Length: 175
Image 1 (cartoon, rainbow, N blue to C red):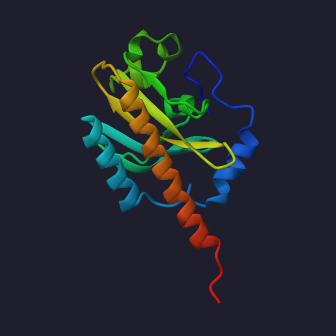
Image 2: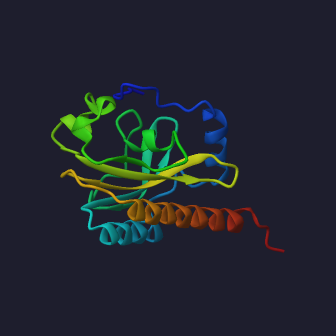
């Protein structure tokens, strides 16, 4: 895996974080309607051209929900800004990505894609592991208020709730 950021992207608890992600048995499933609908609602809520519900695996960031980037289901972890968002329990926000020192070698920012705005809230398990993000992306810089940040965190909690409910169903034995 490449790392296009000027900082480490592997959290100290990586092995345990990946075990937590594996427990939910969702990483290698196809994108589905619930998460795609959630991504669309997020995009509309924030008037953003792109919204994603992603899971951060060991090598790739997998998009379980995708609005605004049709046909893209994953990106190399070393290029995805979601890799930075799982390093903290609070949202990661870049109002003007081109001005951020850690993003000056990132191909999504300095390359053809032209990413300028990113806001990602980590999807956090009950045990405190950040397994993915809900995020919005734009090609224009923008300000992001504290109220918007709080709403994005609620969407991340909603995504985690859905993942947990699916896990309960998978792990429950029907007699």
